Image (cartoon, rainbow, N blue to C red; front, side, top):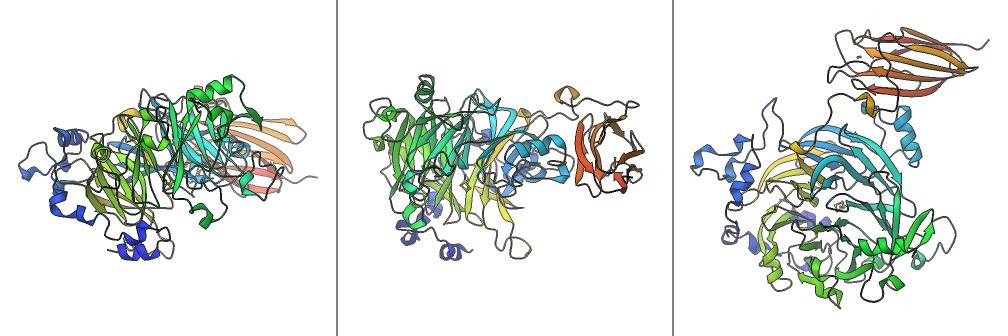
Length: 640
Ligand code: CUK
Ligand code: CUA
């Protein structure tokens, strides 16, 4: 156990934290751990969410319908499917990973802001153009993947994810598990929080973390951080256009929306508006912002904005005329200290703000926000949870689960008890479990919906240290699976799962709510379909050749293609296979082209044939016994 090591290596401790090393330890006493907070039938509900995972039940415990802690098993037999999809952000990898839950098997990666030849992403004209139009960067930093909802439940249509590195938001089409749109958000650097306006995903919010001059075009005062600002961006989920932005005082960190669509909440760590670490941590409280979306939209409607980089920017700073009087567009609610995670409870009663540099979480009563004169009167609970509380998830049975970064633990606590208890009381704490090590986010199954499943939870741990075979100084992260479906026996750590850096957050969705297509529907594609026998190759100008061909087992429409040095070649290829999983690819050596084409899909790549010679176009995807023979010659004749 290396909690001590953790403490000594952690730089975030201050005040309460460094002195509170025994914080919460009494809650680990058996008497406390056995406290029965289970609501009637809760454990049974947790189990029924695991249909098909019969091995979960310990047949020998003699208690029918009750999970035995020792019997919890996440294994999924060979050939069987998992119960849930988990979409995890890839952090600096710029992608989104898809796990099956509870097995924690990684099923596929969805490239988003990165280039990925194994998906042909960034190597054909369309995806290359999309990445180019979104700024032309070759990487991104994904943090918060959120699945679209209808009526407060996952509808399985899209997932949205931010790019903290370059101020962007992307959309993933869950019909094909592919990125289909990226917007480069004007006036925003460090897009961090990402979340939808619920319950029907009417807007996607990008939360601007880094303060910069607005606009950040070299005009104005570049030196003085006081003149900087950050904005919340509201994005249309269909067009991916930025509809409006709100300029605020201070900065923002994470975000979450109220379930009925009225508010969007953001945390913050730099109310000081400083440019150094010591400056950013001076204040004991930072302002949580509650954006009143209908009021902001009314302000936009009334023309109360300034257009900056073609986006209407509404002034939501404290001294803005729109924030005076009884109907402010942004409420500023100070909470301790550099708060990080923001999570609205499934019943929409509260938003829980994790203290990060304070051992508490602050519970804000959503109905009170617009009623109280002193904004801090909307804070109705402040349980003391432990050191470094970062993020909170829910089981739908009245419990919250919060990661404790410094303590390397997940703490389970009772929400109503926290509202009733005195501030900074530890009595709402039910149980703590060690995780390995230093968890950032945690996510429970369907926790972001109005009806969490309450069975599985993943703790996304930043450090793995000694947990896996050593692979050099760069360690994998550790995504740990915890069973939370048994309130009587408590949380149980079930699996360590190494992950390439760096998952931040995840959305976990029941498999019944996502319905991916097994082959492409040509109607969904803009490129025309080339059938067998219809391949064509045409010179359309002095130095331009257009090729359309098909691919199938085990050949391409053309066995050879002859072009001239300097020709621009546009090559469009349809995979005419109708059998699911029968992919082909088009790899062109020394031209940096790799199209990977699913059944009934068409892709196109344009390149310049500038080096005379012979190039063996080949299928890089092992498709059949004659895969190696699936080749075609590109012959580039020298200019004469
Ligand atoms: S953040 Cu990474 S651990 Cu970007 Cu939601 Cu908290
Ligand atoms: Cu087609 Cu290999």
